[in-house]
Image (cartoon, rainbow, N blue to C red):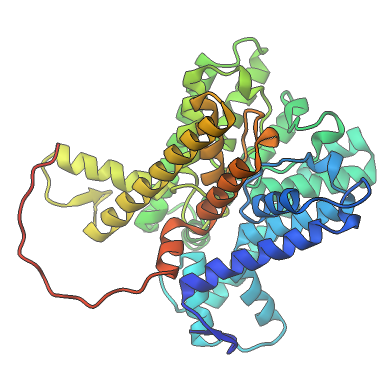
Length: 442
């Protein structure tokens, strides 16, 4: 297809090139002297890492956002988060539509792929609903956070902090401006604030539900029976992954905290591990079991077509239902009264294997190069490929090779493994059905 009649690319290539172009632009802007508080501007390596993390809504940083970047640099980071979170193609086509440009069939098809819409019809109206809803949610989050931040930092700075953290939370980015209290401190100063904690949890959760789930909620309200199977699986899996880990964290971690802070920290870390990247508690003090649970949550991520990254909750749900079908000796995969096509399972299995292979190989490589404990290195690679941003404090001290690995993982996690592979491959001609032969597994 031709994007606005300029260049002929596939939908997958357009998505990849869109994210890459935004990353390059963000890198150049962050290299400007006006983007940093100190003289001389940022280095190419620091700018590239920060721009990639912002565009891929990850939150891993090598320079503290508040202490190192100027207000202009912070604004650039926030813009990259907003466009990267909503989707480069989504924002570009929406901007073209608002300026009066005609959106042809090719652009509508590209938009459908970008937001994971099930059908082409009505995709422009659906995109308008997504953009309006996102802005309303972000504005509401900023208004809820504003009283606390204005109390602590004054009116002007407080409003800016409220807006920045609301957008960062909704887009599941994890960037924060709390470095004014201590570098790389994230939201640890607000571990006992119900308003900041609960607002952030809601923003993170809503942003990670996926645009198609939003549409089901808009059209059907509380009538859950009318929701699509995908929306049902997103809500069920997301709910389980939010509350079950929170209970586990409460009984196994943060025992030294007062009851209120322990409750808030348990819920917050369960929510933020699903690609958001903030933390209110000291992650380094968690047990190895707690860190392993965080890694599993980071790898899973949010829903398809959302601001979150990771393998996606639907991938996990499909793999679990496939296991259930095998255990029950069923020939087909079934969930909530519907049959899931085998092609969905093949895609899910491929995605799972890709994520696990990259996560493990990259973690082992960083562990060897940086002489880090393997679990610590795996925590960083899970955070990168899941576009989370949580860290055990080692990312700023990594060498260039290790940073390059994390940059590649962040890009892979946000754009999507299959999208990247499809953008560089062409489907070969079908040779027809080959004769089957059974092999034994397990």
